[in-house]
Length: 306
Image (cartoon, rainbow, N blue to C red; front, side, top):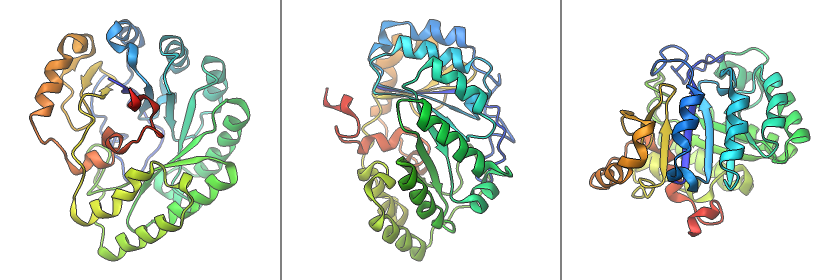
């Protein structure tokens, strides 16, 4: 396993229109038991992790996130990235503590465009201004530049151009993905891309600077995927894992989370062998799961050289 995404909590202070986590949390309990997590991940099986990502919900709402991040820094000092994904709203007190927990932490802010678009999408008045203030704090206090994360909707692709301008001004990278037929745990959002919208997206991607296009191989594949559903066979089945707040583990976002995290080392090969026998790709893998990793080159992920 190279990548582990940890849902610290399903609690969230956003009311995003493309998400239903805040309406119907996928599982109980609300917060991950940190002591249970650290005991499980102490197993040598996890020594090779190169990417550790805290997400949610809104992970900064976990009451012990700063302790969790400090623990991860000590446990996985060799990781290429230790990251937290946040909506950036009301998070300054936590960010100030995280600087001491891990000054090398990568902070990834969800941003959907300038204020009118972003605040409407997130259901948070003043959310855009909060993100920018906290982005400046991260730039000045953490060793790694923040990253901006964007989910593209077909009728709002102008948000990508807006985020690209913000990223250029603040010297940030952008991670982007397309919304496909609803997203984020059975959202009610209906997402259909017309051929004209796909063409417009493709033209926009072609004129953006490289760092505003995220993983270039993955981004280049987006228009064709939206047109035809065509995709590369997933090469991530033996690389990734996801932990939910109840301590259950799934091989990736498209698999059911039925295995307690404590059992992963003993059953890993069994899980991988079963996954390799099936073509388990689903459209949502292209946006929500680690499928994008199958497009990574060694330049994007140095650990793929080994």
